[in-house]
Length: 417
Image 1 (cartoon, one colour):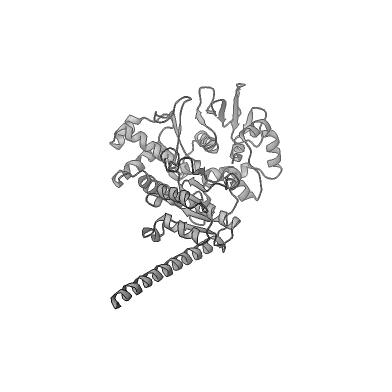
Image 2: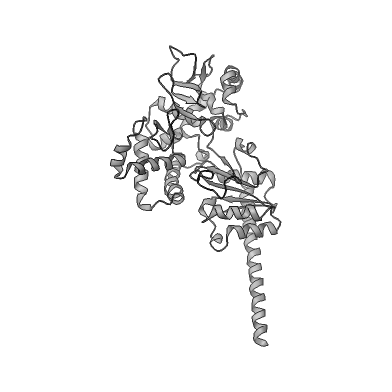
């Protein structure tokens, strides 16, 4: 009898201990949530905040390192709940607590405690994250989950468990519009590519009545895409760290590549960044890296997924074919890897391609144009006013404040998001 009583007492003690530990850990998470939300000061409100369908129960925010994914989650919590509302909770998968408890168990307990919105940062660092998110979606019907992940994650193409239930959005670096609003204290809205095409003269007048965008354009090209330019430390040093983290963590971890191949991927990025911007010589690259052509093509795709490169194809072609041209994903990357780079034409082409990336299909142009956008519209990127013009081509001019008819200021395409 005494033995049974001791066993029963021990079970009650362990149960109480588990409850105490659960309450203690949740209190710790709430305190961290409150601390982070109170101190979140987003310099500008990201346009993506108003584009997401927040009624969805499972929302993924993808983006490359350094573009502000964590700040975006915390800003959502601040706008919709405030720092002390326990219906919303921010957690980060770097926390060692999740080495002993599953994400699904945590979500269940949070919901049972009255939680409504769970914000999960860096979800890809949790093993079987997609399976756990599916369980949460199917069994925690009163809970909304908003998670951030690396741009290397392929939610739709490679993840059948979340296909059809997870709404995926891309958070990009600052557009030129966002950078200008921040630096000049303006509040310009976004414009569609059709609005720019049809109303660019009027739009330029509205912008120029408040600020000369060219006073800020070169600074944006150099250091305006990544929000950490506002920090006091060296922007270039920080960006180089981010580039290395994209490769060392995002690509190797998510694509499950052995660490011994890290140097080959880094060398490939360097060769592509410093080489000609035409079609890559895959055979030569394979020889330089001492690997196969297929491996080179796959590595280029991984670097593209990480938002370090952009692959351009001829109309009608696509991966896994060899791209017709490769550009850096944004101009800040060019200056970080090649501080003395002076090919202005390539810089302007990189800016244009990056500005349209994600919402428009940009393909390699023919002899009459630099790019073909959305399979129909031809664009030529010009450093000077063209002497001859084709009626079916739009001319994006660098270095001009205002355009006329087919000639559109290049900076204006930085207002697309």
